[in-house]
Length: 277
Ligand SMILES: NC(=O)c1ccc[n+]([C@@H]2O[C@H](COP(=O)([O-])OP(=O)(O)OC[C@H]3O[C@@H](n4cnc5c(N)ncnc54)[C@H](O)[C@@H]3O)[C@@H](O)[C@H]2O)c1
Image 1 (cartoon, rainbow, N blue to C red):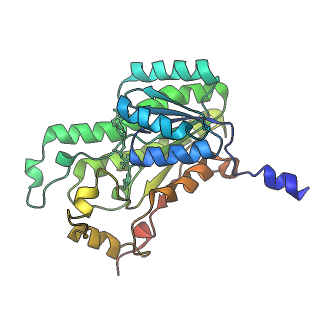
Image 2: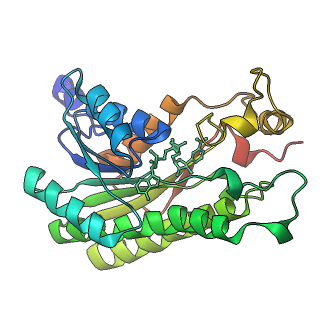
Image 3: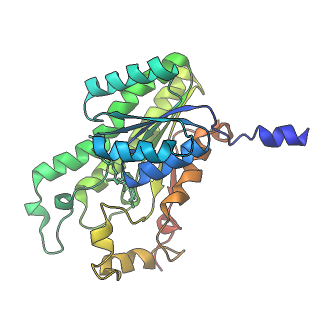
């Protein structure tokens, strides 16, 4: 019956268990909300306890299933502990969203600052969080997926991985590494486990978040010169709304994407397609 087929929609992710790193943040929070609304059991993982408390209140307010666990994506022991807790509670790990990441204010070169004066400590912080912070959770939670012969990992790349974006050298290098790692791990998993464990990424275009608000929006609410350049190269002519990432993530985690692995899907209003001319 058509009705049964509609109900069993191949885009459904209902009943899955998902770990979302960086769930205390803007993008992670939005995707976590869309996941509980899709019937997913969500493990919100973040380094900030107080932010997690707020998030879990939001996620469970209307009956969503979610727990918050404080963890550090750069600490394998901390991730092993999370893995044990999740498997003890829900028996499996179906989905890993590697969302913890981003830039730091000092990781962005000032307009008049030379590359030669780049603070090396910030370079190390930003490259480690975005690159190792994707690799380490994939090692720990991906192992559970390989053992249970099913799972799906989604990483977060960036427009900075396609062509150069000024002033953010560490972030650009690390997100390029995330795109490459997505292809590498997808190949590795498929060669070893067939279609059991898929690995993909999304590459968000420009969304106003806590980390980039100051470089995109002036204190009086007007657009900075940088955001005018962004919009000029975005054929849709606007910033994204963070909720516009949710569908792409759900699709890549669903049965509808069962033959898709190793892709980096831009969600960018056309930014990565357009030469600007
Ligand atoms: N906002 C955008 O426009 C945009 C665009 C492209 C890509 N991204 C990417 O999306 C992701 C999320 O961005 P956001 O804007 O939501 O950032 P955000 O700062 O709001 O959220 C990041 C979260 O990660 C957590 N975190 C930081 N270090 C951690 C660690 N070591 N262990 C565990 N958690 C840690 C933070 O506490 C925070 O809650 C990042 O990878 C970012 O690079 C964002």
